[in-house]
Length: 354
Image (cartoon, helix red, strand yellow):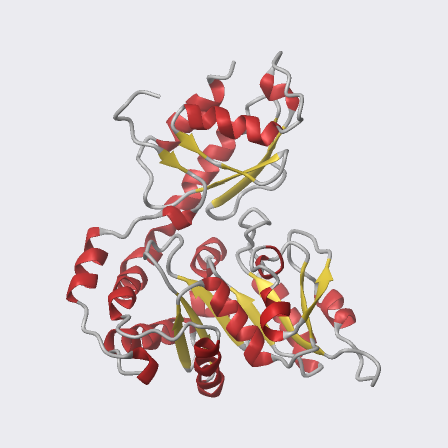
C-alpha cells in the first residue's frame, strides 16, 4: 500500500473516533460523582436516553456487555435459565458472564436469522415443576450482530413478548444497534423498544461516542441495576467527560445511520459480482457478512483452507481492514468514520486478486 493513503477500517463500527464536537463537549463537561448520582451530565444523558426509548429511567454503563449482564442479574436469580438465540451476543461474546457473574444457564434456541418465534419461546419456558430450573428471562437481539445486521420485525417482537409475559417471564432486548434497527424498520426507536422490560443500547458503535452504553427500564429496575453495576465494578466518578459525547451522539448521530446502510448495500452489490463470494442474506443495516470460497483465489492454493483469512490478508495488504469470523465468513461494518471512496477502494482491492 502506498504511504499516505488512509486505511479503510471495516472491522467494526466500534473503531469510530469521537467527532470534534464530541471532543469539545468532553473538555467542557460539567461533572460530579456519579456513584452519588451527582454528575449532571450523566443525569442528562440518562434522562435523554430513557425519554427517547420510552422508559422511565436509564443507567449509564461503561460497555454494552456490562449493560446486558446487569440486566440479566436484575431480572433473575442464580440457577435460573436465560432463553436466547444460539448466535446471540450474550452467548458468544460476553465470556460466559451470565454463568460466572449471576449463576445463570443459557437455554439456547436454533432460530432463523437469529430471531426466535413466539412458539419457540413459549416451548422453551420451563413449566413450574420442583425438579426443573426456572426460566428467568428471555433475551432478544435487534439488530442481530452475527445475523449480519438483520432486523427483527416489530410484530415478531410483540408476539414473543406476549408469549413470555403470559407466563410471567420478563423480556430483555440487547439493542446495541437499536437505532440502526429503527431506521431499517422505518419507525421511531421507541417503537422498537416498546414492550420490553429492559433495553440496552450502545453509544460507542455507529453513534460514534468513544465509550458507553445505556440500560433502560422502570425506575425500580434501574434502582437495582445501579446496585448491580457497582457490584460488577462499574461504579464511576466524574464520568460526565464520557457522558458528554454520548449526548452529542444522541442529538446528532442517529439521523445519519442510513448512510452506513447504503454503504453496506453498495458493497454487497459489488461483492456479489465476484467469483467465489456469496452473500447469504441481503443486508438490512450496517453489517455485511459473506462467505469466501476457493474460487475467489483462482489458481492459488490455500492448504489450510482458511479462505476468509486469506481474503482478509489480501485486503489488508491493500489498505482495507475486515474481520474473518471463521475459515469461510468475513464481516464488514460501515460507520461514519470511513472515507468517501470506501466502496470504490474496497471493491478495487477485492478485484486486484485477479
